[in-house]
Image (cartoon, rainbow, N blue to C red):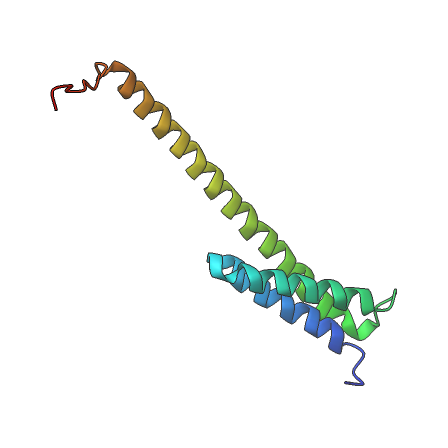
Length: 113
């Protein structure tokens, strides 16, 4: 274990960098890795002392900055998903509207067969 009191805070910032990279290039197969980073971060934070040493200030500032960027990236992704869902709903309503104008197709069973 490192004797550098800022080392765990550097690790926290490193996790933030990995998280931002994954969120920015999110693919479904990366969700498990994103979840793993979250669990690592939670465990690391739980192990930190209540008061960070002064040497940890740069790492904490970097971690906070990365968290803000990650939050922004997630909000943009959320907006993209909501927009796509709205577009899909609008397309579905339009298709249903066109379907309602089509004449009814009654299937006639040929009983002679």
